[in-house]
Length: 87
Image: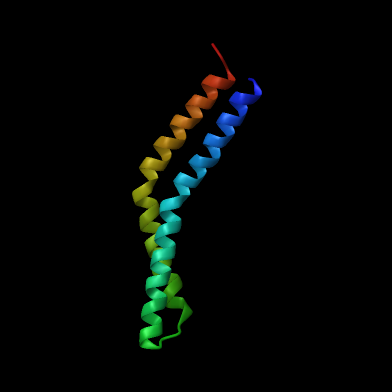
């Protein structure tokens, strides 16, 4: 395996990590902002509420994004094995 191939695979791996984690991070950020906005409007400063709602939203996002993430990761792993162990 030459340096160019190694750099290409490493770059694709890092981008894949970002693509897989992006939906969950976006959901956590949006739900966190929404709950914080509602807490500011209602003057309710209970931290348990924001953590609970965010936990439920992130869990739902993981369940929805899991098939896409697993398929993409499996495809990448197969490509890595084909590159690392030529036939």
